[in-house]
Length: 330
Image 1 (cartoon, helix red, strand yellow):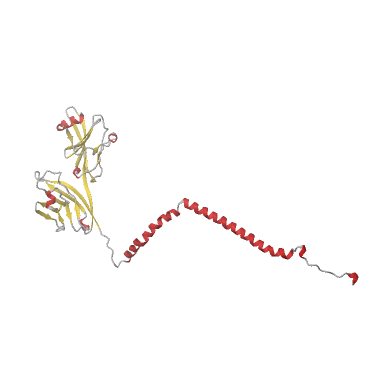
Image 2 (cartoon, one colour):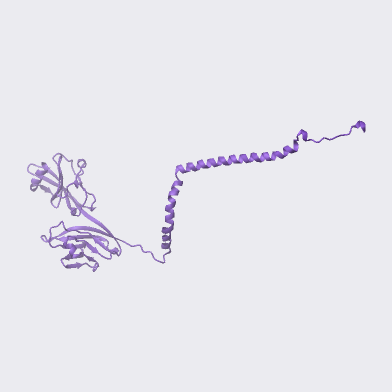
């Protein structure tokens, strides 16, 4: 396999250091997906190989017909083939971990007669951070775990840039300026692999990016363990003499429950079915009202006509006889 041969002849690879672009910084949160940018200056061919490395260890390789994932990156890294043919050699890194914090180099390997020539494309610094928020006056715990490191006597250091916040080696500890009496990494927890920093009485000025390091006993160099972004929020305090706070309380206690109870009713009133039913009932009421009105009018007319009928029409048998004297006998 071409990838295996690349690994075997890696000692014979010639790297062109002047072809690489200035390094890029990419920030990613723990558990997210990071995209480390890379762009080819020429087409990807059947003999081309794209390789990503971190701390001189292979992270990912893709040839024309094969791929290889480095230890610890299995199932988490890829350079999509369809994107690669478009000249995009960016590395997709899923489920970002604290240990992924490193400098990554992208290389293009081209086979020559006796060795592979590696042309460095660019360098990307992956900055892995984790966010922690706390209220002003509370206690914040900035997580840290060194159990993946091979050390016997842990020497931990927390800092903001070049400013030391806290340092512990065994029973000896140091608290930075402005943090006296407020920070600690408990010794018993540190021996268990927990190097989390406990920060008491958080203030707004504590908002910063904190980095934890473990001093390696063999190299005497600090190894980065964790980057933490701390944000502090003010607590809302209601004054007793604040009328607005009292009004808000009454609104919450009385108005909101009433509003919640009325919402279903208001929703029902706005439905098309309810409007149709109301229109139907209104139409029926109008018809009934009109019928009753006509009936009442007819009844009143009959009552009016009855007296007139008795006044101008009399039965024949009811007329009284009137006698007039005969002129002949007068």
